[in-house]
Image (cartoon, rainbow over all chains, first blue to last red; front, side, top):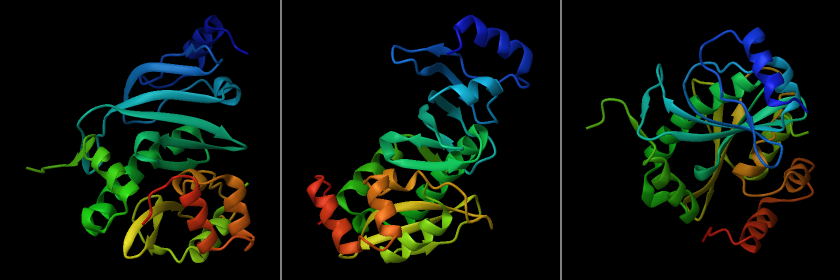
Amino acid sequence: MLSIRDISLLRKSETSTSVEPEADFGPTSTLWSNQQVFFSPIAVPRPVIQTIGSLSLTIAKADGLDYEILRPIPVVIERDEDYFIASFNETNIHVSGDTMERALTNLMTYIGDVFDEVSSIGSENLGPTLRYEFALLRTYIQKRNAE
Amino acid sequence: MLNKTHALIIAKKLEAEIAKKTNNHDIAKVFHNGKLIAKFGIRRGSRKDQGHGHIPRELHTSPHVCKEMADCRIQRKEWLEILRENGQEID
């Protein structure tokens, strides 16, 4: 397992953008991030991507997407065999991606697609669980230019 | 590993309606008694081996159950029963 000091060194040498998770190991040896990131490809040192089991972060801004974020979206990215699963667990929205960055990008666009699709169906046509999840999702995002 | 081929079979097994989207995923919507009770994303692209490990979570079930559905050993009716047994409100 990489130590925090090693991760800092890796971050200095191998990351390429200014947006990166704050690396820290939690009590279960999980790599955690308490830092909010804007929606752009995250930069995680490649050796860390190969090593970690999961990464937690929050998304605070959705530039370039057709919705805006009302409050930070908690995201967990986990490795599953040779690809990654990004999850917005509270609303049961999950996607896969070949890389950590792709999984996060997919999640952000998928959140908007789910919002549109479920909105078009209408709350009265949702089962109890999805009705709850959609109500929760509406506390996190809204369409741009919505009154 | 669940892949895109499995995802498409599961969608068919669950009699899901596929909503074509312009982004990276289409959305499979599962209705029961006229209500949307579950949805899951199907990755776009031609590669059939694309990982779809997110599907069990979106369907409130286990990877094993999803694999069984993809292998035609679990049908929609049984999946609905599993949801009920797991305490999911679907009715």
